[in-house]
Image (cartoon, rainbow, N blue to C red):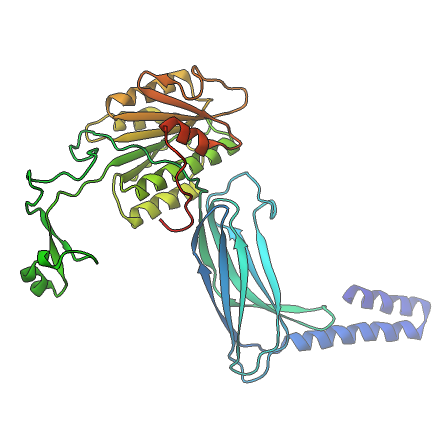
Length: 406
């Protein structure tokens, strides 16, 4: 419009046409009126909640907005926009939303009276794993002709974590290891009767009130009961190969999803879980939701790592203290020497399963489901089918799908 006003004024001067000056003045007047209308102060606050703030790929998060007019005057019609931008390590794989994965939710907000509030909700599809910055939330004031707009931030950005997609798979079977309680098929009692005192723990709903330890309860102010059996948990370790030369973009996503599926299944089965990656990251063996969340958050952002780091990681897993079941996730592009190195872990772990995600043009020295010594080699296609191949390898049925939670 500004360029048009200048062109009309120049044409009016050159051609001597007064009407062109009138049109130029009209264009300038529209620009001035629009600028004045957007300079009106709008005092609007908003709060945003993500439900849930952590979701698995393929799921959805719901964004709930509460917008309040803090101004003593009625607001004009506002255009509200909320952007979603990847904030974790960038990957070359592109999202359907755009080259950089950026997307934006936009809607119009009806005028609000002084002190009035309004709610808005929109669905945020979680298509790819990673961390995303949601926001900042902006309210845009514009003039009626769309010549001017003035955005203002009304809510800060928050972070959405998208965990890898998970499939319903069977857990790694419990097995004995160096720890005598790491693979027992049932809780081991301290004494032959199972009634020996082991320790104290907080009261849980359903506990026998006759086992309340009253002196400790009086001292702490909370119910404490006697633990009469030695606590037991199996161990499950997942070694994820993330070397750049071994993986393609697709195979890495399949391997990461498989790692999350196995660890989640073992966690729900009551095992102590551990994630180790070829780049040297090791979560350690532990239990609890916080430990599992830390593992899933790392899997959400893990990317290709150095190509020469696997031997040192395998050497660490051969030391005493490792045991239980082990699942190794790599691809058919793994060199034979590395495959033999991984197979050597059978001397430390009771069971070893090596999952080979197919890569075009690469073969392995064994067919799918074959055994290399006491190591199971499991070959799975890169376009899906991991859950079926894994469950068949373990000789069990398909477990119930995970609807939500852990």
